[in-house]
Length: 194
Image 1 (cartoon, rainbow, N blue to C red):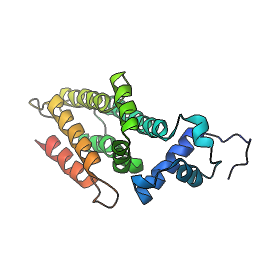
Image 2 (cartoon, rainbow, N blue to C red; image 1 turned 180 degrees about the vertical axis):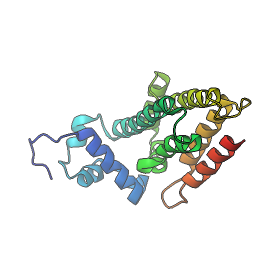
Image 3 (tube, rainbow, N blue to C red; image 1 turned 30 degrees about the horizontal axis):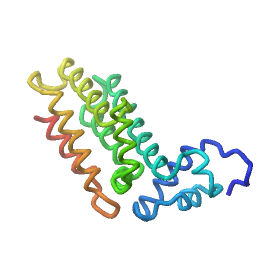
């Protein structure tokens, strides 16, 4: 445990990673500011020093993970013509399920104030499913232009199907349910092979 008055490096990420472990291991109901700081091995008040309460923390955690996945999705543009289309798509869609994605989605849904903060941030332009969908559409369009997808392939519809399915799986999965990645892999294969 960090002693009182000693700076904790990368405090946001340390707390976020601890929260993910708590939720994945014990479920959304186990998340408290105390469980997060205990898991992170830091002072009990550290979460409240950096966030305006647990709901603000949960909202920031979810928004941070959306932003990370959106960054990965935007990087797809540079992969056009490299690797396999299916492999590139899986890397991005699977990222939504990393770090306890389904558990975190469930957590946000159980905390109305956090869900409201997330919705408001997304409406104000924070990267979320829309940014991910747009990046996937752009990538698929580039792959179609390179001839790696059929000329009749519809990037907009495929991106919507991928992001919509990921959203559905995030909202309906919870700790202990089957891994959603195999379902996403089947969808990616069906879309790419169509």
